[in-house]
Length: 207
Ligand code: SF4
Image (cartoon, rainbow, N blue to C red; front, side, top):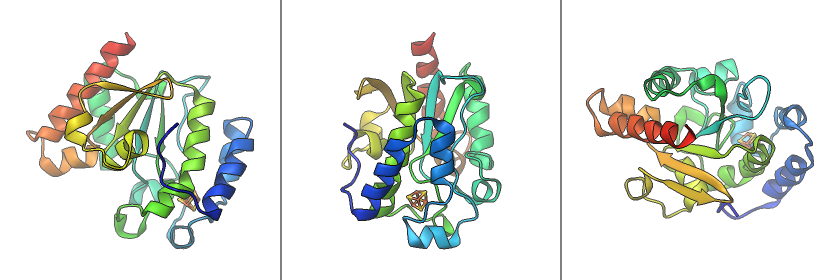
């Protein structure tokens, strides 16, 4: 079972509602008015539920940390600078974003892009867990430390787990750098190279 942080009452309620969603549309409709995290619910513009490919099961799922400013404005994941770089690196790796589902661990933007707090991750985990069940994709890419820790445990060190697939609940989970780290360290930095390398390994594993 995925090692999400410990539950509280709000997390249990999210998990209960999410588990009852029979399909993606029902889950999205239930998640959009979610106010389980009062601070995030008060400041967000949209609950960024995620993108799924038209017409069925994704080849792989991309999971980031949380929406940023552009994602909050548009209601779509990975559409800002990080999204543009992610699209570029996916294409360089021979992958098509149109075949992927794109999700976040936390679906509301934290104020000033702070790291999501542990109770927020715990509350939003019910949505993500059910999304992964409904999508039933064979491979997942965890982008950045928050996503890596959601799948691989709270003590995960990115440098120690990236570069290979991990079996989590029967899925191959690749943990790698978040595109924002690749932007921060520049075009010649290690995060960009590592992210491209890991996406290329994923592409090879899916071929
Ligand atoms: S972050 Fe997740 S659990 Fe919290 S209010 Fe938003 S959708 Fe609900």
